[in-house]
Image (cartoon, rainbow, N blue to C red; front, side, top):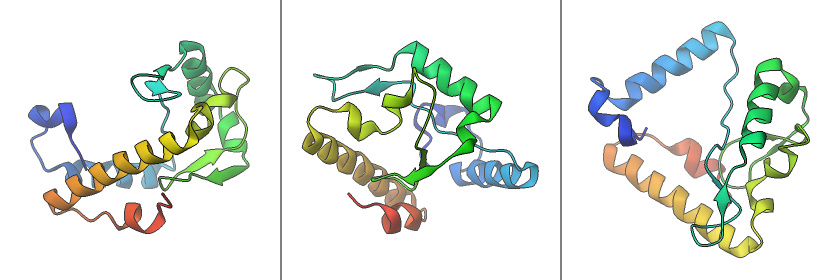
Length: 137
């Protein structure tokens, strides 16, 4: 696990917090959603911030259970299941590769991001077989 900006505030190794989080999710039966609230549609030179209306619609759909209604497809880069349908304000953002005009640039950026995370996990001595075995980029 990467701690990024939270590192100074964590008194234990990142994997301890990850294990605690996973255990609590399993015990409670809660669902966890990864929602992009940042950059979309391209790199720093061509992309833009995620519209706040899309972020709010996705959060609402996650909280009220409508995102759970499925169906889902497997993500092309990460080990994620992506809802095929979503709120009108956010549906076009569900598949990040579709927000980029240059699909090849998306593949390159996604692979670069994944490789950086994988390298960091290796440096930390953490297992990352989930990333290695299921990423297709």
